[in-house]
Length: 141
Image (cartoon, rainbow, N blue to C red; front, top):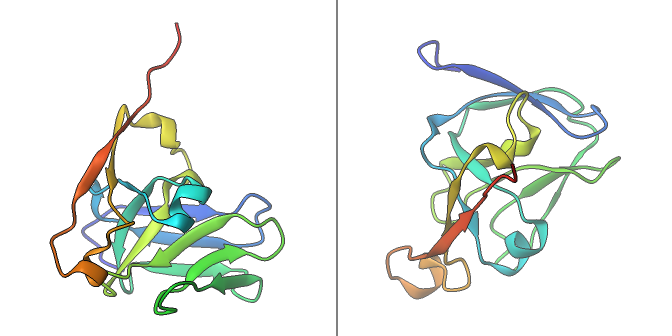
């Protein structure tokens, strides 16, 4: 992993899967997606390049799920079921990492999260990725 960027530690809920990640651009690329799978799992993700995520413990309990074209692995812990990361379909040189799995980070740390149109995925339409909207978090006093 690159020495010039901050290495973050992450884990699933039960701790069986532990990993380290260097985010490509910090949290500048956070997003959610409207595709059927992302809509149901509801995760906020940030990007890491291939080689930017290293599973340090529990690779044997990490499992994957594929759907639609079957071209992308969505990884999760087989014990607690928490989604940790997936390889991006639109750019398979990137992984999307569940920010809720990162130590000291919460999806509620971000006041606004861009929501991308995964229903009309660029790999299906040939058109540029479209922003479908913005998810906002407003903390109660």
